[in-house]
Amino acid sequence: MDVINEVKAMVWPKKRKLFTAGPVACFPEVLEAMKIQMFSHRSPEYRELHRDTTKRLAEFLEAKKSTVLLIPASGTGFMEASVRNAVSYGGKVLVTIIGAFGERYREVVEWNGRHAVVLKKNLGEPVLPEELDDALKKNPDVEAVTITYNETSTGVLNPLKELAKVAKERGKLVFVDAVSAMGAADIKVDDWGLDLVFASSQKAFGIPPGLAMAAVSEEFFEKAKNVPERGWYFDLLLYRKYLEEQWSTPSTPPIPQIIGLNVILRIIEKMGGKYSWLKMYEERAGKIRRHVIELNLELFAKPGYYSPTITVIKCPDGIDSTTIYDAMRRYGFEIAKGYGPVKKTTFRIGHMGYISDGDIEELFTTLKKVLDKLKSG
Ligand SMILES: Cc1ncc(COP(=O)(O)O)c(C=O)c1O
Image 1 (spheres, rainbow, N blue to C red):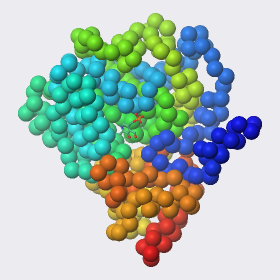
Image 2 (image 1 turned 90 degrees about the horizontal axis):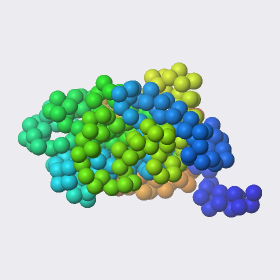
Image 3 (image 1 turned 120 degrees about the vertical axis):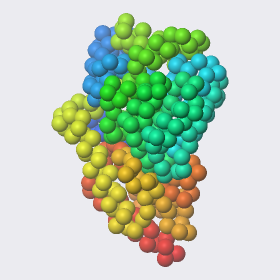
Image 4 (image 1 turned 45 degrees about the vertical axis):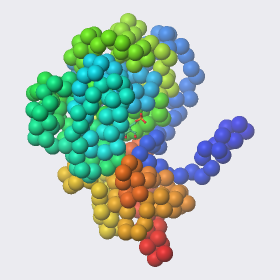
């Protein structure tokens, strides 16, 4: 056991309560199940695990007509896959940007030899359906639209259902970065007409990193058939082939994370199903925002578009985000600094994963103490 303690001393010298943007604290049941001894990803046992997990996730996402894929990657893998599989080389994509992760999507589009047409909003604001409609009217030749459902750098939740409706009415493929939304904000894949909606394991499902999951529409696959040179690692038609033929993946999947996902989907079921679980997230986010307001702090996101997974807060005058972050760490809390252009002027409280009400109370008692001390110099 010495080696385990040696590693723990290296990565976890002080147990801190996690209020991060991810990786987040995992459910104890998830961590326990992930210790199961490994087995072949070509075995009947693995096939059953993969089949059962994709079935459960498809139910959660209301994705009967779409295909759920689990791939060994972080969420950004699916960003790359969306462009390489379903946009012609040199083709145009309308990238909506409300913060740093929308900017990343633009880079992914351009670095893969496609052309990004940008619809960019002021930080803190969502994209409105009429703005998207207007941009599509002006750019009828784009092949797809990208939407960040929950912008983790600003704490804004985009009105995804309405935006997807506009994009589908104009006949575009809809790619959704739901990395920090899936598992906490509602997603109805079929009803809302999402062609690719993806996430990472280390966010709202509270699983360690290493697994990316997505629901992919038939329309997406049909388009992919006509896009040559999709690459190998992120060829989603190849993933579908392995899924259909052997309930597995072309390369080795992160088996422990898939076990973790299966466990959390079962926990959700036992807690009363998808909507009870989403309510838990909504209530937790509401509680955190009330505490922020009680401390006379200002929320960064526009009212009405608050994120259910992360709260972005303006730093009080004269105090920068690293100072708050470092002080909170000294008191046993890992929060998140600002991200992107508002790195110094905002700080973030993540509310994904395994968090108790008691931890939230303690976090805000500590934050008050820290801010009072910093303000008094
Ligand atoms: C909205 C959003 N998109 C994409 C990413 C990148 O995800 P990953 O690190 O799993 O590739 C993140 C990570 O924080 C995110 O919050």
